[in-house]
Length: 129
Image 1 (cartoon, rainbow, N blue to C red):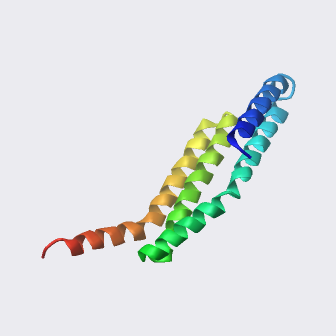
Image 2 (tube, rainbow, N blue to C red):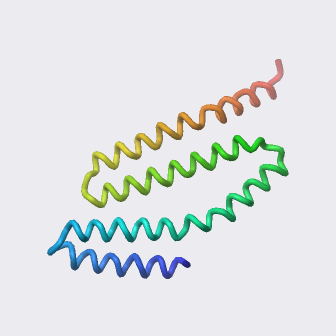
Image 3 (cartoon, rainbow, N blue to C red):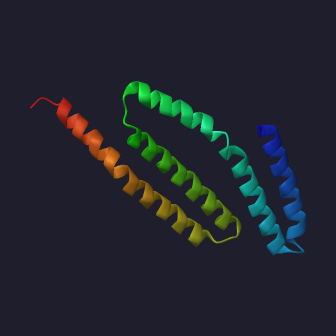
């Protein structure tokens, strides 16, 4: 699916949702959530190629795979948290969307601590004693 198809589906869904929202607001929200999930799932499969390239680059550069996996998990958490927050925001629940984003940021911070500590150790080893 290329971007023109995604934009076309988005425009079509928007028009349908605007028409349906006045009569059946719950159905309009469900349609918006469904279209959002469908667009998200359409691109999840394309990530395999990116991950393969990143794994190859990490292997050639000697970076331990645990750091690459952690970084990929962090990226996944960021995307999922943002996606979930946007769906909740579409329902008009800004306060819950903000809490989802905050939880995602906290989880990212927790997951990043080992990488940050390795970076600090590396910098300290490079400095003259």
